[in-house]
Length: 299
Ligand code: G1P
Image (cartoon, rainbow, N blue to C red; front, side, top):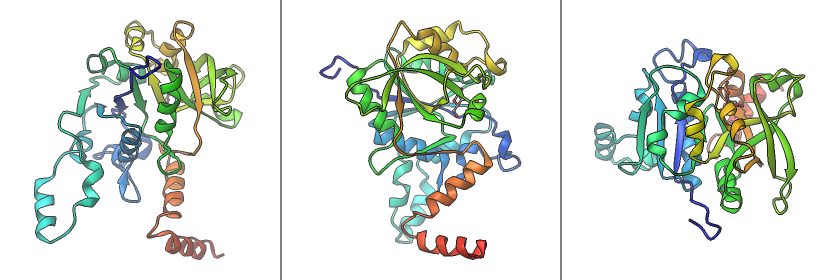
């Protein structure tokens, strides 16, 4: 508990059981979360963001064919011994090291939706608040100010439940969960506001705003009990958004506007954009990539 009586966020759930059909055939034998942006797999960016926010325990909701994700965060004796033998530094592997006991996997035996995936972690979450990361959504903040860090800072002041949101063009809302925003909270520079309603994948006409849920959440453990009895929603799936919507009014719900950039790496175009954007600011590659892009564009 902090001085406001708020329990810290120490656990994060990463739903990674999705099939990744949009990237086939690349994802036939490799989890989509292992596709690299430059030299880090997508899942690594989400894990780095979690750790930057002070989160200790990582809970992966996995399925068949996802073993590579767990391997990635394990010690690789042969590799490390070989590298050490060649006098190479192992520093590059640092982000893949997890304290023993801090990586937990749960299998989601059947793909029944995001709400169901989160519910699979209920026994490990217990009675604590927890974060959720949808790794497809790549959130890049200023150094030391990632999306979850910004959310945890807000959470430590207001408690309850928080969802990161961002604006999209109105015609795109039907691909997302959409919030009905309420009053902005004082003292947050307009970045934190109440959430008065939530709808998963509404029609453009039915959408209460163009503010979408962008794949980062801090939720109270009561959501697990709500998910327990959750009926199927949009797409015939058990939707996290529907369970959260039912909690509004019983618990505080706030939206946090992320100050940073977001790339939708669940789509090929978003993935290419992220690769290009990060390459253009990569300390060792930026100048070469810029020259390369100009050459390719004939500029
Ligand atoms: C999920 C959530 C949705 C959210 C989106 C962000 O949808 O259900 O509320 O806006 O992620 O990417 P999915 O992309 O799994 O259809």
